[in-house]
Length: 202
Length: 202
Image (tube, rainbow over all chains, first blue to last red):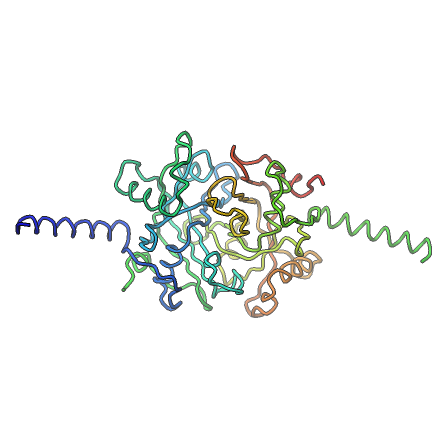
């Protein structure tokens, strides 16, 4: 390969890594083992990467603005390569997508309990970790690179999605995270900024 | 036993059954087996009775009124004797109780997936049932019969709650249900009124 080609290639790789890093959050290989609860960013990313379903909350437009939770599948990236950003595959036949298109304020909640690592500890015990990501639930433009990435991420963890009916018009949504509520030990929520969450110190 | 005593006893039993039935909803022995999805009331009650944790959604007062979901434990009655009304054990050290005391609009979401009966079906597939109960999250007066019942119901399913710290001031909350969103098959949410849910035809 010529010097010119190597330079071009290295620039391309650099661009892709930076694009990935800045748009999606640092890729993390998630470990099977739960991180130390003192490491809030690692614990938060582990929870989001290891789970594959949770409850997505939006503001109802037909129930007096009551907050409406809904069970949804999600993915934050390929298995063991989480980005920290949850992507969803939603149809407007279901209320959550309809509500979000009118008012994007939303949160997404997952628990450590389904991972099996809480053992006999109660799901509400603070040492059984839980996280709620709050922000805006946004439609991702279907022909964007991000949507393409999201679909790969979703289909890798939810194979049947590939065969869901075309006339249901499933579309990719993402949560743009603005604040994080993480409980993984006694003493209240762990301080954790979105920046720390997206770009944990390795 | 004299006729007078028998009459008194039967009145007392009748009163207790009616009180239970009207305040809490008909007691149902929940079966291990999932009911036929055509039977919306039975399926809804089975989901609520067999689960012991879910996500409780309230309106945040410090996050721009973003709907805030939180993992909580719950109980709707003694094991296999569900009432249909979810009771919670919450502390105002946690945001959910604080939010609800300012604005009681709330919903509670559980999934069939943690019960293990969805098998390999995706959690977002409509045949893996899910339910969201919407209404008002209310504090139950600590010295009422209802709170006493709720504590028995909660402690029966969440034994460690008995030993949670007194200075956290855990209190009983309940969701007063106003509408029900149940998905257990293709074709959209099952029509199901609160009355049908609380008093299913046996």
